[in-house]
Amino acid sequence: MTAIIIHCLIALLLPPLLLGVITKTKAAFAGRDGAPYFQPYYDLLKLLRKGSVFSTTTTWVFKAGPLVSLAAILVAALLVPLGRHQAPISFQGDMILFAYLFGLARFFTTIAALDTGSSFEGMGAAREVTFACLTEPTLFIALITLARMSKSLQLSTMLTYPTPAIWLAAGASMLLLVAALFIVLLAENCRIPFDDPTTHLELTMIHEVMVLDHSGPAFGVILYGAALKLLLLGAIFINIALPVSTGNPYGDWLVFVAAMLVLSVLIGVVESVMARLRMVRIPQLLVGATILSAFAMLLVLR
Image 1 (cartoon, one colour):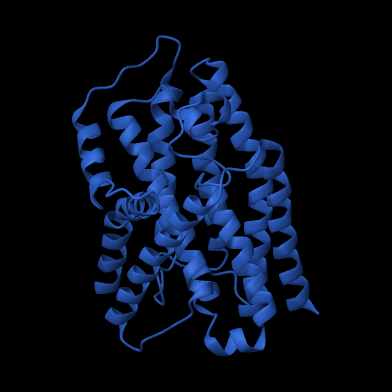
Image 2 (cartoon, one colour; image 1 turned 180 degrees about the vertical axis):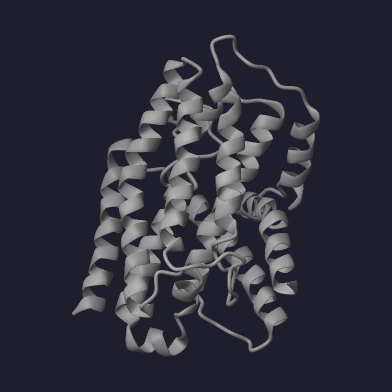
């Protein structure tokens, strides 16, 4: 029970801090002090206190989009082990449910954008779905590779299976998986070099353009859901890239939180040292990530 409570507390409270660390890292590279680490929490509270404005062209789909998307990601958070611990909900084949929950969240975000009747948001929705068609195979192949290695379709078993001994025995496959999942992590969370979450130029936006008409609590729900998605994909990456166990359950929780903060710093460094890719180059990089994960699976199957 204690592990479940800690899992839920980390899943609910940590995501906004990750965004604050990324922003602070980018500010440090730019020679600025930047906003406080806890600024995302203040922003969410401010949005929750505001009112909402709805276009007369929208229907219930627009209002339901943020709520259904957040609900799907919250359920997915119960399936992913945070660190070297079992997830609160775990069963054979839960990896498929996890993938479909992410797909459900994306679907409702997309149709909420289309429901506005805006050509800009329709453009962003088209880009989001197009790039999703390239990132989802990478994630599926990576999960299938882990399933083959662990001989289980259970996320808790698959993601806690990697150990230092496994890395020594299958280092090439693990490196390919880590590289592919890091690319997916950046793409799924709309980070540079795929998208710039701070841009305000509609012609270059992907995810941000889909939420232009959302305001107040609905926009806060979207921001929190995006932060939670970053945590979950980051947890998958950390479980594979850093298969370290302290032997102490509380020590493992601390290691996981510290690793997530370091990963946030790494994302901030990537966004500070490179520019956004041209739109035509993004599919090429995503296909490259799929090829990396496919090679990892071939090395495991040989």
